[in-house]
Image 1 (tube, one colour):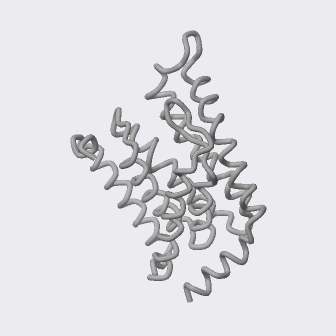
Image 2: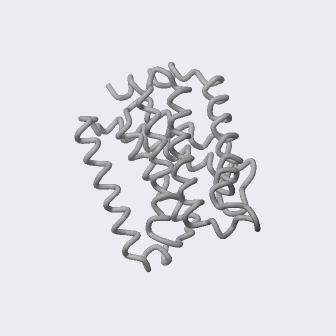
Length: 202
């Protein structure tokens, strides 16, 4: 926490992102009703718990978990892109507080809020959860890839380009993570879950 507070530019950047999220929610006219907030908070808490159940952890960050992104994807599919992006921002902030690794304010954005905000894009394809999941993970990959090339290129083995290093590094854990999420969606009664959330909402 002290590492974050020591860099006011990081805080300003995060506040700017948060302001844009609320602006998007307003433009999309997504209602932040009490039931929406309660459902989203419960799913967000589940995502934080699942994130601790790591199948393996990469040396410089990045993990394959027991489907930690599933709750965030469900939020986006049920309540819309704006709410999903807001939940992803909150998840990214929790992740940053737990394991802060700060090199630059822009790096913070591309490693913490933006990749998880990308899960909200699953709400674009709400009737096709697998397409939505693929789109969300593609956007998350782009964020981590840019960060890897620009800020972590020095970690690349000798003779390997930062672009190739970032590509391989991020695919190594993001593809298994996406496949686990899709497998969970195959097993879970997703339609019934979202219908239950709809009943709670009303």
